[in-house]
Amino acid sequence: MSLSVLVTGATGFTGRRVVRALVADGHRVTAFLRPSSDRTVLAADVGVARGDLGVPRTLEDALAGVDVLVSVASLGFGHARGIVDAARSAGVGRSVFVGTTAVRTTLPAPSRAVRLEAERLVLEGGIGATLLRPTMIYGAKGDRNLERLCRFVRRWPVIPIPGSGQGLQQPVHVEDVAHAIATVVGRGELVGRAFDIPGPTALTFDSIVRTVAVVLDRRRLLVHVPAFLARVVASREQIARLAEDKSCDPGPASRAFGHAPRSFEVGIREEARTLGLLDEVAS
Image (cartoon, rainbow, N blue to C red; front, side, top):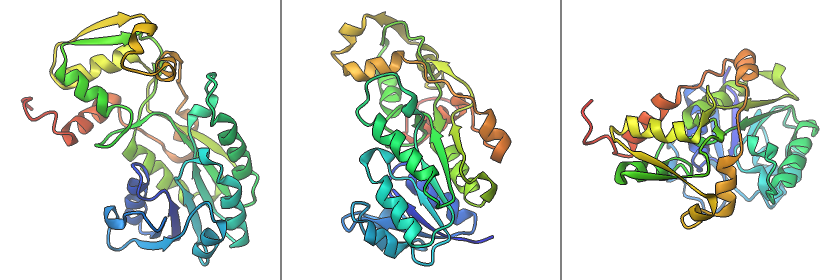
């Protein structure tokens, strides 16, 4: 069934792929963009509504006649109440919001309380919401998580690892996130529910680095260094996040709507290829 869908955060790393997935599924997609946003990253058949999430009335106007709101924009900026109020006023009965599994961090993250309150507002707001929480997203040029690591591993023979390297990460490919969001759009039975959408397997940071090295066909020496030394190249918060276990169970999303993310080795090989890092590797 073709639906009219408005997408916030449509030009971001994840958002533009969500737009493509929705269009591929036959939906009529409009991107809600700030006046300064560049729409050239979107296909010509994607509509545009200009406005600002900080001005809820502009979102309410853009939602007139829309079947589904897909909110990919971060819930960490305090806009949730305005978004929910605008969607309810516009009569939107179905919505999908993208959060993050980072709300479970035990670290003193400043945005955690904002995100948790946003989740509550979304799920209790009377707008038919389903909440999806991705883990660490990677998979293409411009990702803020693993592109830098790939380039570092390709260049340097010795890789410093802060601490033990045994903290668990569960990266999920951006195309798998986009597919999950597009799939959930038409699943009204999932209203009021929240799902983690992680990668298939929890991996230690050591194993992530080793997998990247194998994919890039590079022999690399991993050297574990005390966290205080690693602060030369990373912040205290970044190092603490690496040490924190961030594993999730993909089972509930798999059973509810078929979430089947690709393996990390397959995904990071695809990313390395898009970054042009496999040019010298025989394949």
